[in-house]
Image (spheres, rainbow, N blue to C red):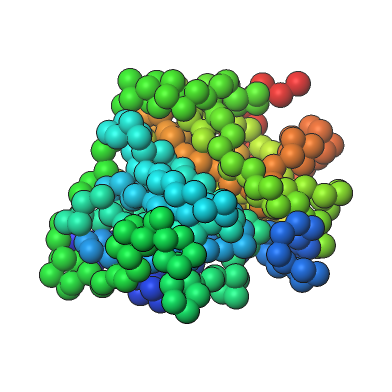
Length: 361
């Protein structure tokens, strides 16, 4: 598969600045932001996109009112350049930490920071996801003022000018062969868990996690069952080790967006309030034609999941917007819901996933 075919199969369109984009998620939850520069307006708690950058393409300088989190899928690392609100310069690398110890699979861009980024290899590409919370709106995108950023930050003149303009990838480049991402074996997953200092998951046996990001922005949810104020969004790393048989039925008040980093694949099972059953696969589309690099779990939907192949570990990120609070997460027993009685037409899958790994008391 070449890069052009991949972009078409994923539904990419040209980004207004550079590269290619596909919008993937706009949570239904509306929030009033109690901190920052948002005023009295309400907006979505979180949003997400896919982005594909290739060759000489660069994302030029801009800033947002919200935090932005980048999630690496495959390709080469992105070098992210930031000028923080206090005027200090900082760089970060988005990529595979196993092949580049300076890289991270998730990179947080703090709100109010000027930032731009570029490929570390101008003969390659990078495919990644972006999440913004509180949710992105075009009016939040700030381009440099007339005269540019150099008068504001003369000490950073060279890097500002280097990333002030961009080019589009040539059609010849889009015909280049896509590099299939490396599979993560058990040893590599152990190394990831160690490098990222993942701890045993409190609920999922054989699962390991760490929180990566929890935005400073406090919000009040205007159309949900969330109580009080909370952060707009949060994210974690999660590894399911080989041999894990998934997690039994549970439900959450917020949308949960699962974002694939590597390894095998996970099958998610869903039961909605209307009695409908569906499933989706989180994984590498190049290895599993039915898989997606993102899987959305709608708030208020019962769901369970299992490894497609229990001999393969899986590494992924999970975003919640509004942000995760343990009290929002419930089992059917805690809710007093008999899923077999509620969904008799789906008895086989209800019974199968009721026996998945469970550690919650």
